[in-house]
Image (cartoon, rainbow, N blue to C red; front, side):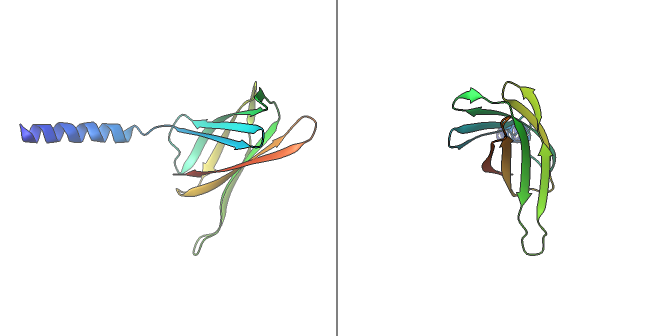
Length: 127
């Protein structure tokens, strides 16, 4: 009976770990708020992020570019991935970023409004 219980608990733990939670993060800079999500956990390689941008609680439509980078470290060069986001309308955007390896990546979201005003929201992703 003890062996059966151990096997059952091991299976439950294994299944729960294999279904890691998706990514979600909220970032704020002054009156600009960005809610970033991914349907799957962030991994090395291609990742699809969806995000909403609001300013003063109103959805904004703008030109948005994402830049993810990892600074150079001893024995490793700097890495960078930069992409323009697709505007899905109503303040919603989607972008595919290629993160070359696991670790802490700095993420900068560049927002250019229709009037030409530029702003930047900074955060990080660690996986």
